[in-house]
Length: 228
Image (cartoon, one colour):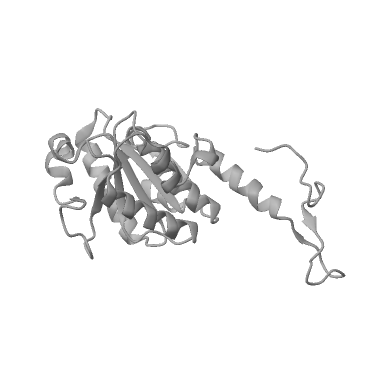
């Protein structure tokens, strides 16, 4: 977080109201930026924010970016920048060395910049919490989900894949039960490998983009960010 003194308010965090100079002072814009920086750290944003932004990531990437997936991500980023929740659940797929994680954090940062809170977790963590004997860790999934405006889950590397599929289902159910929240998945697994790993647990849960029509469907839109 920046430690320099704001040149606008000189560190006072408030400034005279330009519309009413003799009235109450108003918050300096630097306070909003501080909140964004604090919420970004809490949400686990690890990339420099100067590198974030869907089109910025696309232009900087040496990979062949999927045009259909990019179109969906641009729309999603625009909604989050406006402080609106996504009406679809997206699952971003990409290779570990590709731009997938940058795309994911670009979406999260867009929402944080608009005042939303966010949490990034992996499915292994949720599984561990479910069986933890520590009361602080054993937080009901629904309670944890409702704490944040954006709930972002990575999956595919966990070993307890039998219960993992059930938790994926539960997360999707929670998203439709609480529409004023955004749920984002991301994984290194290709579309067909999800069904090989989780078998019947995720049957009917994911729909491929753009191979399947998903308008109006309450399923997870699987979005490959690279043409492999």
